[in-house]
Image (cartoon, rainbow, N blue to C red; front, side):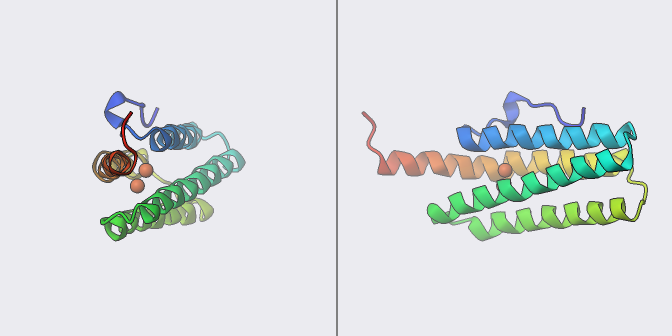
Length: 139
Ligand SMILES: [Fe+2]
Ligand SMILES: [Fe+2]
């Protein structure tokens, strides 16, 4: 298991949390397939599932930030671009048949992602709550 879902990762925004759980599941699936060497075809399939979902999730967060005129949108998007570039590097290595170490995968797919969620996504989720509280009167 690469990443274990933990309550520490819950941002409090149900939509974001749901997507993070699925994202973690995709990262874990790819990692297990890669580490156990389940064959190139399966490894490639799991990787493209992960990459596709990363793209969808980042797009969803960015649309949310745009809708809220989130002040840290460009900073947050920069982080997404940085991660997407790392994912592209991994893809290239996979395509070239280069060996990717478990340490590299842990650093990129676990450490980076967990740090991003804890720092940037928590901040965004907090903002969505405050914003809703301001626009929707509580009953
Ligand atoms: Fe994010
Ligand atoms: Fe996220």
